[in-house]
Image: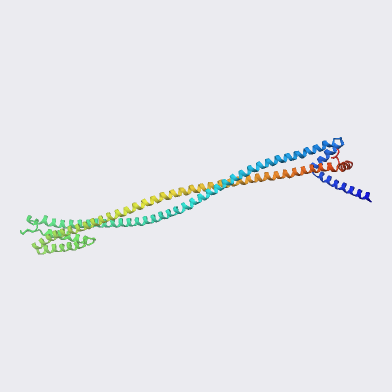
Amino acid sequence: MKSIIILVLVATAFATNLAAFEKLEKSKLGKTLLNTIAIQMQTGEPLERIFQTLYDLEDRYQNDQREDDAENKAFQGVCDADLAGLNQELANLEQRDTELQATLDQLQPVHDQKVGQRVAKLAEKALLQKVIDETTAKRQEENDDFEAQREEFTFVSGVLAEARRLFTDNLQAPAFLQKGASEAVHYTPQVFAQVASHLNAAAHKAGQMKHIRTFGKAIKLMAQLAVKAQQYANQELTGRIIQLIDDLQNQLQQAFDLARKTEDSRRQAFEAYNTLLNRDMNKLNSAIANLEAEIQSLADQLAATHSSQDDNTARHEAKTQQRDDRRAECQQAAYEYQQRRSARDGDRQTVSDLIGHLNTNMRDLKEYIAMRVAAGDTDLGQ
């Protein structure tokens, strides 16, 4: 019974070892090592040399791993430094963007305020220009009216002068030329007809004028007196007509002097008022020019700040891409390092497991190799 149990245990142990050998053979390195050991066993290679080969291989894996660890640590250290530098650059760019935006937030309201002030000043200028235009137009109308008045007065003065000339040139007594003369004079009947015709024509024209209608009535009255003087041969009436002409001339001159004085007053008032208006206009033009200069300066600053902000944004995007690319590169290197480490750990474990089997299960290993060769495995024992 005891021997049966022993046999069962031995069989169980052999089966367990076979499973372990099969597991080793599933890896490329394990299969290669088993194949190498099989050849060395068949060629009578000393067992110590086989062990030494495996020990050397295990040491090489450990050394390679230490070198890889050091290189990875150094590389990841550089990555950390690079990423820290890039993150700092991004932080600086973000701070710069904040500063630029603060500048824009400060400049834009000032610019808009200046634009509003300019609009208000332009509106004020338009109103002032309207006042200037209206005042100038009114002054031109007043001047035109005065010039028309001058022409009308000149016309009436000429009519009166011509009427007096007709009397003085046609009366036969030279003494009649002197005002207030008491010497008897003689007249020619034709002179009264000429004076009456002349005065009637002038009265009709004067009646259509604006400023001398009153004088037109007086002229018409003189024309009627001239007719009566001719009808009644009234020397006294003739003298009164001459005197009336002289009086009208004096009144006409006084009226014109008053009109001229009024015109001078209006002109002086206009010039004084226009001086004030022009002074205000100059102030407005100066204020508008200053505002336009300030607006242009602010617009230039805004444009430059926007340009700097766009450049800063582009640099931030490029730097972000650079950081992301560098991070991806570092992550890929870390992943590849981990993959190498895992593969190397697996290979080193395979070597370690094989060394363990050689130390404890040499007999079973030899039988396993023999079984595989007998089964026609072309990779073992070749």
